[in-house]
Image 1 (tube, helix red, strand yellow):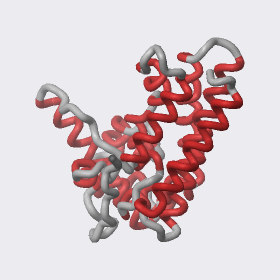
Image 2: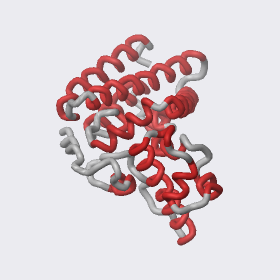
Image 3: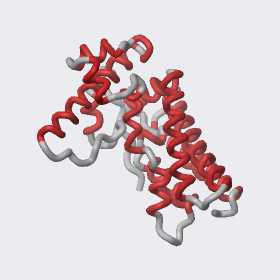
Length: 236
């Protein structure tokens, strides 16, 4: 049975992003599952989260290109060198939220049951994400999630950096498929399908529809996309 879609938030875009990560319903990209051991490690995590929260709140309020690293450091009450110890680039302040999904397609294939072919496992995994209204599928109408995706998709430097994340995922997936050009082509197609499906779902919601309304179309689109890929790759 599908999970109930999250309700649109009544809070403004200034809401603390860490709070979003801990709200029921997986409204935003989830935070780490386990707390690090040791006081020093926990302090580092809290500092990192505080910097990221400050950055994303400023980006959503002003736009990515209108916020400086100095603005973020001042808001988070840290020095610029401290900020750069946690985040190598300004773009990483946003895109680190995709980090938990790095290599996800490769993990799905590697951890699948022996009698399930890779494309079927990836299809099932994406469908499960739609059932849970996971933000990474684009099928989530929480206001902060929609705004976060708009920020990423409409900011050229972020979109470019996100492309590199996807190329890394493509390499990781190809490595666990059969060797050769066939695996690289198949991996590229899978990552492209996931990107197009997620962007399509987000755009429909950004245009004013609810996740519940879009969900049947999202499922049908995913079924069609993976079916075409499966048929075109000989059920491999």
